[in-house]
Image (cartoon, rainbow, N blue to C red):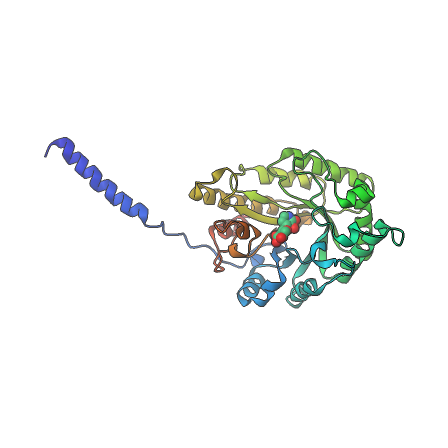
Length: 352
Ligand code: XIL
Protein backbone atom coordinates (compact mmCIF):
# COMPACT_ATOMS: atom_id res chain seq x y z
CA UNK A 1 0.00 0.00 0.00
CA UNK A 2 1.59 3.35 -1.05
CA UNK A 3 1.96 6.16 1.48
CA UNK A 4 -0.71 8.15 -0.35
CA UNK A 5 -3.24 5.34 -0.35
CA UNK A 6 -2.48 4.61 3.36
CA UNK A 7 -3.17 8.26 4.20
CA UNK A 8 -6.32 8.17 2.06
CA UNK A 9 -7.47 5.03 3.89
CA UNK A 10 -6.77 6.68 7.24
CA UNK A 11 -8.50 9.87 6.16
CA UNK A 12 -11.55 7.98 4.87
CA UNK A 13 -11.60 5.97 8.13
CA UNK A 14 -11.33 9.22 10.10
CA UNK A 15 -14.02 10.93 8.04
CA UNK A 16 -16.33 7.91 8.55
CA UNK A 17 -15.81 8.10 12.31
CA UNK A 18 -16.39 11.87 12.30
CA UNK A 19 -19.48 11.44 10.12
CA UNK A 20 -20.79 8.86 12.57
CA UNK A 21 -20.18 11.30 15.44
CA UNK A 22 -21.76 14.20 13.61
CA UNK A 23 -24.83 12.02 12.96
CA UNK A 24 -25.33 11.71 16.72
CA UNK A 25 -27.32 14.75 17.89
CA UNK A 26 -25.10 16.81 20.16
CA UNK A 27 -26.10 16.04 23.72
CA UNK A 28 -28.34 18.99 24.52
CA UNK A 29 -27.14 20.90 27.56
CA UNK A 30 -29.68 20.60 30.39
CA UNK A 31 -31.79 23.81 30.62
CA UNK A 32 -32.20 25.53 33.97
CA UNK A 33 -35.96 25.22 34.44
CA UNK A 34 -36.21 27.38 37.57
CA UNK A 35 -39.59 29.18 37.66
CA UNK A 36 -39.24 32.45 35.73
CA UNK A 37 -41.43 34.40 38.13
CA UNK A 38 -39.14 33.49 41.03
CA UNK A 39 -36.14 34.93 39.20
CA UNK A 40 -37.64 38.07 37.66
CA UNK A 41 -38.01 41.13 39.93
CA UNK A 42 -40.78 42.40 37.61
CA UNK A 43 -43.97 40.94 36.09
CA UNK A 44 -43.49 38.27 33.46
CA UNK A 45 -46.41 37.71 31.12
CA UNK A 46 -47.70 35.24 28.57
CA UNK A 47 -50.42 35.41 25.91
CA UNK A 48 -53.43 33.17 26.45
CA UNK A 49 -56.52 31.97 24.61
CA UNK A 50 -59.62 30.96 26.62
CA UNK A 51 -59.49 27.39 25.25
CA UNK A 52 -56.05 26.92 26.86
CA UNK A 53 -57.60 27.38 30.31
CA UNK A 54 -59.14 23.91 29.88
CA UNK A 55 -55.70 22.32 29.32
CA UNK A 56 -54.16 21.37 32.69
CA UNK A 57 -50.69 21.12 31.10
CA UNK A 58 -51.06 24.71 29.91
CA UNK A 59 -52.50 26.11 33.15
CA UNK A 60 -49.92 24.36 35.34
CA UNK A 61 -46.94 25.54 33.25
CA UNK A 62 -48.29 29.09 32.91
CA UNK A 63 -49.03 29.43 36.65
CA UNK A 64 -45.54 28.07 37.47
CA UNK A 65 -43.65 30.65 35.45
CA UNK A 66 -45.80 33.73 34.86
CA UNK A 67 -47.49 36.54 36.84
CA UNK A 68 -49.46 38.27 34.08
CA UNK A 69 -51.79 37.21 31.26
CA UNK A 70 -52.57 38.96 27.96
CA UNK A 71 -55.56 37.78 25.95
CA UNK A 72 -54.13 36.85 22.55
CA UNK A 73 -57.32 37.88 20.73
CA UNK A 74 -60.47 37.45 22.82
CA UNK A 75 -60.37 40.92 24.33
CA UNK A 76 -60.17 42.53 20.90
CA UNK A 77 -63.12 44.09 19.05
CA UNK A 78 -62.97 41.21 16.55
CA UNK A 79 -64.34 38.97 19.30
CA UNK A 80 -66.15 41.36 21.66
CA UNK A 81 -68.18 43.60 19.28
CA UNK A 82 -71.19 41.87 17.69
CA UNK A 83 -72.81 42.86 14.39
CA UNK A 84 -75.74 44.45 16.26
CA UNK A 85 -73.34 46.55 18.35
CA UNK A 86 -73.67 44.44 21.50
CA UNK A 87 -70.58 43.21 23.37
CA UNK A 88 -69.71 39.67 24.44
CA UNK A 89 -67.33 39.24 27.36
CA UNK A 90 -67.60 35.50 28.04
CA UNK A 91 -64.04 34.53 27.07
CA UNK A 92 -62.47 37.72 28.40
CA UNK A 93 -64.27 37.05 31.71
CA UNK A 94 -62.91 33.47 31.77
CA UNK A 95 -59.35 34.72 31.26
CA UNK A 96 -59.85 37.44 33.88
CA UNK A 97 -61.25 34.94 36.39
CA UNK A 98 -58.31 32.57 35.83
CA UNK A 99 -55.87 35.44 36.44
CA UNK A 100 -57.73 36.65 39.52
CA UNK A 101 -58.03 33.16 41.04
CA UNK A 102 -54.26 32.70 40.73
CA UNK A 103 -53.25 36.15 41.85
CA UNK A 104 -51.98 37.02 38.36
CA UNK A 105 -52.32 40.42 36.70
CA UNK A 106 -54.41 40.80 33.57
CA UNK A 107 -53.12 42.99 30.74
CA UNK A 108 -55.80 44.42 28.43
CA UNK A 109 -55.07 43.90 24.74
CA UNK A 110 -56.32 45.76 22.78
CA UNK A 111 -58.99 48.45 22.70
CA UNK A 112 -58.40 50.09 19.28
CA UNK A 113 -56.52 48.42 16.41
CA UNK A 114 -56.41 49.36 12.74
CA UNK A 115 -56.93 45.68 11.92
CA UNK A 116 -60.32 45.58 13.66
CA UNK A 117 -63.11 47.63 12.03
CA UNK A 118 -66.36 46.01 13.26
CA UNK A 119 -69.49 46.38 11.13
CA UNK A 120 -71.31 47.95 14.07
CA UNK A 121 -68.88 50.90 13.94
CA UNK A 122 -68.60 51.03 10.15
CA UNK A 123 -72.39 51.23 9.80
CA UNK A 124 -73.01 53.45 12.83
CA UNK A 125 -76.07 55.66 12.39
CA UNK A 126 -74.42 58.84 13.59
CA UNK A 127 -77.72 60.67 13.63
CA UNK A 128 -78.46 58.58 16.70
CA UNK A 129 -75.02 58.49 18.35
CA UNK A 130 -71.74 60.15 17.48
CA UNK A 131 -68.84 57.97 16.40
CA UNK A 132 -66.70 59.42 19.20
CA UNK A 133 -69.45 58.62 21.68
CA UNK A 134 -69.72 55.05 20.45
CA UNK A 135 -65.97 54.52 20.73
CA UNK A 136 -65.81 56.08 24.19
CA UNK A 137 -68.75 53.88 25.22
CA UNK A 138 -66.90 50.72 24.07
CA UNK A 139 -63.66 51.70 25.82
CA UNK A 140 -65.54 52.57 29.00
CA UNK A 141 -67.35 49.21 28.99
CA UNK A 142 -64.15 47.21 28.48
CA UNK A 143 -61.83 49.08 30.83
CA UNK A 144 -64.47 49.52 33.51
CA UNK A 145 -65.30 45.80 33.49
CA UNK A 146 -61.75 44.78 34.45
CA UNK A 147 -60.93 47.76 36.64
CA UNK A 148 -58.71 46.71 39.54
CA UNK A 149 -57.56 43.51 37.78
CA UNK A 150 -56.12 44.86 34.54
CA UNK A 151 -52.74 46.45 35.29
CA UNK A 152 -52.79 48.28 31.99
CA UNK A 153 -54.20 48.44 28.48
CA UNK A 154 -52.94 48.62 24.94
CA UNK A 155 -55.30 51.46 24.12
CA UNK A 156 -54.15 52.02 20.52
CA UNK A 157 -52.30 49.10 18.92
CA UNK A 158 -49.90 49.40 15.95
CA UNK A 159 -50.43 53.06 15.06
CA UNK A 160 -47.46 53.35 12.65
CA UNK A 161 -47.41 52.26 8.99
CA UNK A 162 -45.24 49.22 8.26
CA UNK A 163 -42.83 51.30 6.17
CA UNK A 164 -42.37 53.70 9.06
CA UNK A 165 -43.51 56.68 6.94
CA UNK A 166 -45.98 57.87 9.59
CA UNK A 167 -49.22 57.08 11.43
CA UNK A 168 -51.57 54.57 9.79
CA UNK A 169 -54.91 55.48 8.30
CA UNK A 170 -57.73 53.49 9.87
CA UNK A 171 -61.45 53.71 10.41
CA UNK A 172 -60.64 55.35 13.74
CA UNK A 173 -58.23 57.99 12.40
CA UNK A 174 -60.44 58.73 9.39
CA UNK A 175 -63.46 59.33 11.62
CA UNK A 176 -61.80 61.18 14.51
CA UNK A 177 -58.38 62.33 13.22
CA UNK A 178 -54.94 61.00 14.16
CA UNK A 179 -54.61 62.74 17.52
CA UNK A 180 -58.40 62.86 17.90
CA UNK A 181 -58.89 59.10 18.02
CA UNK A 182 -56.07 58.78 20.53
CA UNK A 183 -57.69 61.49 22.68
CA UNK A 184 -61.13 59.84 22.64
CA UNK A 185 -59.80 56.35 23.43
CA UNK A 186 -57.18 57.31 26.02
CA UNK A 187 -59.41 59.81 27.84
CA UNK A 188 -62.25 57.28 28.08
CA UNK A 189 -59.82 54.61 29.34
CA UNK A 190 -58.35 57.00 31.92
CA UNK A 191 -61.81 57.94 33.19
CA UNK A 192 -62.82 54.26 33.42
CA UNK A 193 -59.72 53.22 35.37
CA UNK A 194 -57.56 55.97 36.91
CA UNK A 195 -54.96 53.39 38.01
CA UNK A 196 -54.37 51.44 34.80
CA UNK A 197 -51.21 52.17 32.82
CA UNK A 198 -52.30 53.22 29.32
CA UNK A 199 -50.11 52.12 26.39
CA UNK A 200 -49.66 52.43 22.74
CA UNK A 201 -47.88 49.38 21.30
CA UNK A 202 -46.08 48.55 18.05
CA UNK A 203 -43.76 46.08 16.30
CA UNK A 204 -40.63 45.91 14.09
CA UNK A 205 -39.21 48.84 16.01
CA UNK A 206 -35.94 46.90 16.39
CA UNK A 207 -35.49 46.17 12.68
CA UNK A 208 -36.93 49.36 11.09
CA UNK A 209 -35.27 52.57 12.35
CA UNK A 210 -37.77 54.68 10.37
CA UNK A 211 -40.66 52.96 12.12
CA UNK A 212 -39.06 53.50 15.54
CA UNK A 213 -38.50 57.18 14.71
CA UNK A 214 -42.12 57.66 13.58
CA UNK A 215 -43.38 55.85 16.69
CA UNK A 216 -41.32 58.12 18.94
CA UNK A 217 -42.42 61.25 17.07
CA UNK A 218 -46.06 60.23 17.50
CA UNK A 219 -45.58 59.57 21.22
CA UNK A 220 -43.92 62.98 21.62
CA UNK A 221 -46.85 64.62 19.83
CA UNK A 222 -49.47 62.81 21.89
CA UNK A 223 -47.75 63.69 25.16
CA UNK A 224 -47.45 67.31 24.05
CA UNK A 225 -51.20 67.34 23.24
CA UNK A 226 -51.99 66.09 26.76
CA UNK A 227 -53.18 62.60 25.74
CA UNK A 228 -53.07 60.54 28.99
CA UNK A 229 -50.63 57.99 27.52
CA UNK A 230 -48.33 56.74 30.29
CA UNK A 231 -46.87 53.50 28.95
CA UNK A 232 -44.95 52.41 25.84
CA UNK A 233 -45.29 48.95 24.30
CA UNK A 234 -42.60 47.28 22.20
CA UNK A 235 -44.01 44.04 20.78
CA UNK A 236 -40.65 42.48 19.85
CA UNK A 237 -41.85 39.97 17.27
CA UNK A 238 -38.46 39.12 15.77
CA UNK A 239 -36.82 37.06 13.05
CA UNK A 240 -33.69 35.23 14.16
CA UNK A 241 -31.49 37.25 11.77
CA UNK A 242 -31.98 40.49 13.74
CA UNK A 243 -28.48 41.88 14.39
CA UNK A 244 -27.15 41.79 17.95
CA UNK A 245 -27.69 45.06 19.80
CA UNK A 246 -30.88 46.12 18.00
CA UNK A 247 -33.17 45.15 20.89
CA UNK A 248 -30.94 46.95 23.38
CA UNK A 249 -30.80 50.13 21.31
CA UNK A 250 -34.58 50.11 20.80
CA UNK A 251 -35.49 49.68 24.47
CA UNK A 252 -32.98 52.34 25.48
CA UNK A 253 -34.48 54.78 22.96
CA UNK A 254 -38.05 54.13 24.13
CA UNK A 255 -37.01 54.34 27.78
CA UNK A 256 -35.89 57.91 27.11
CA UNK A 257 -39.49 59.06 27.64
CA UNK A 258 -39.17 57.98 31.28
CA UNK A 259 -42.41 55.96 31.05
CA UNK A 260 -43.09 52.29 31.89
CA UNK A 261 -42.00 49.93 29.09
CA UNK A 262 -43.88 46.76 28.20
CA UNK A 263 -41.86 44.28 26.18
CA UNK A 264 -45.23 43.01 25.17
CA UNK A 265 -45.22 40.16 22.61
CA UNK A 266 -41.81 38.49 22.37
CA UNK A 267 -41.31 35.63 19.96
CA UNK A 268 -38.38 34.87 17.63
CA UNK A 269 -39.13 33.05 14.39
CA UNK A 270 -36.52 30.53 13.19
CA UNK A 271 -38.11 30.19 9.75
CA UNK A 272 -38.46 33.87 8.85
CA UNK A 273 -35.81 36.36 7.81
CA UNK A 274 -32.44 35.69 6.26
CA UNK A 275 -31.44 32.51 8.08
CA UNK A 276 -33.91 30.29 6.26
CA UNK A 277 -31.98 27.12 5.34
CA UNK A 278 -29.60 27.41 8.28
CA UNK A 279 -31.75 26.02 11.08
CA UNK A 280 -28.88 25.50 13.51
CA UNK A 281 -27.65 29.05 12.91
CA UNK A 282 -31.16 30.43 13.30
CA UNK A 283 -31.61 28.59 16.59
CA UNK A 284 -28.27 29.88 17.90
CA UNK A 285 -29.27 33.45 17.04
CA UNK A 286 -32.73 32.90 18.50
CA UNK A 287 -31.21 31.90 21.86
CA UNK A 288 -28.94 34.96 21.81
CA UNK A 289 -31.89 37.25 21.04
CA UNK A 290 -33.94 35.88 23.94
CA UNK A 291 -30.99 36.51 26.22
CA UNK A 292 -30.50 40.04 24.86
CA UNK A 293 -34.20 40.84 25.24
CA UNK A 294 -34.14 39.91 28.92
CA UNK A 295 -30.78 41.62 29.49
CA UNK A 296 -32.06 44.84 27.90
CA UNK A 297 -35.39 44.79 29.74
CA UNK A 298 -33.80 43.96 33.10
CA UNK A 299 -31.34 46.85 32.60
CA UNK A 300 -34.21 49.37 32.51
CA UNK A 301 -34.77 51.49 35.62
CA UNK A 302 -37.01 49.52 37.96
CA UNK A 303 -39.84 52.09 37.71
CA UNK A 304 -39.90 51.52 33.94
CA UNK A 305 -40.06 47.73 34.03
CA UNK A 306 -43.78 47.26 33.41
CA UNK A 307 -43.65 43.61 32.19
CA UNK A 308 -41.70 41.15 30.04
CA UNK A 309 -44.30 39.24 28.02
CA UNK A 310 -43.94 36.38 25.54
CA UNK A 311 -46.50 35.80 22.82
CA UNK A 312 -47.44 32.24 23.70
CA UNK A 313 -46.43 29.54 26.19
CA UNK A 314 -45.34 26.50 24.14
CA UNK A 315 -44.17 26.39 20.52
CA UNK A 316 -47.38 24.63 19.53
CA UNK A 317 -49.42 27.50 21.02
CA UNK A 318 -47.78 30.14 18.83
CA UNK A 319 -49.59 32.07 16.10
CA UNK A 320 -46.37 31.65 14.07
CA UNK A 321 -46.45 27.86 14.34
CA UNK A 322 -50.06 27.89 13.20
CA UNK A 323 -48.72 29.65 10.09
CA UNK A 324 -45.64 27.42 9.63
CA UNK A 325 -45.45 24.16 11.61
CA UNK A 326 -41.64 24.19 11.28
CA UNK A 327 -41.37 27.33 13.39
CA UNK A 328 -40.40 27.09 17.07
CA UNK A 329 -40.50 30.72 18.32
CA UNK A 330 -41.02 30.43 22.09
CA UNK A 331 -39.32 29.38 25.36
CA UNK A 332 -41.03 26.02 25.86
CA UNK A 333 -41.37 23.19 23.35
CA UNK A 334 -44.77 21.76 22.51
CA UNK A 335 -44.41 19.22 25.33
CA UNK A 336 -43.86 22.09 27.77
CA UNK A 337 -40.13 21.47 28.26
CA UNK A 338 -37.90 24.54 28.69
CA UNK A 339 -35.73 25.19 25.62
CA UNK A 340 -32.32 26.89 25.31
CA UNK A 341 -34.29 30.11 24.70
CA UNK A 342 -35.66 29.75 28.23
CA UNK A 343 -32.19 28.96 29.50
CA UNK A 344 -30.87 32.19 27.97
CA UNK A 345 -33.56 34.24 29.74
CA UNK A 346 -32.79 32.55 33.07
CA UNK A 347 -29.04 33.07 32.51
CA UNK A 348 -29.63 36.77 31.86
CA UNK A 349 -31.62 37.08 35.10
CA UNK A 350 -29.15 35.09 37.19
CA UNK A 351 -26.31 37.16 35.76
CA UNK A 352 -27.68 40.39 37.22
C1 XIL B 1 -52.44 37.94 16.75
C2 XIL B 1 -52.84 36.65 17.45
O1 XIL B 1 -51.67 35.99 17.92
C3 XIL B 1 -53.61 35.76 16.50
O2 XIL B 1 -54.08 34.61 17.21
C4 XIL B 1 -54.79 36.53 15.93
O3 XIL B 1 -55.44 35.71 14.99
C5 XIL B 1 -54.29 37.81 15.26
O4 XIL B 1 -53.57 38.62 16.19
N1 XIL B 1 -49.46 42.06 17.09
C6 XIL B 1 -50.47 42.15 18.00
C7 XIL B 1 -51.29 40.97 18.33
O5 XIL B 1 -50.62 43.17 18.67
O6 XIL B 1 -52.61 41.32 18.69
C8 XIL B 1 -51.31 39.97 17.19
O7 XIL B 1 -51.89 38.79 17.72
C9 XIL B 1 -49.89 39.69 16.71
C10 XIL B 1 -49.24 40.95 16.22
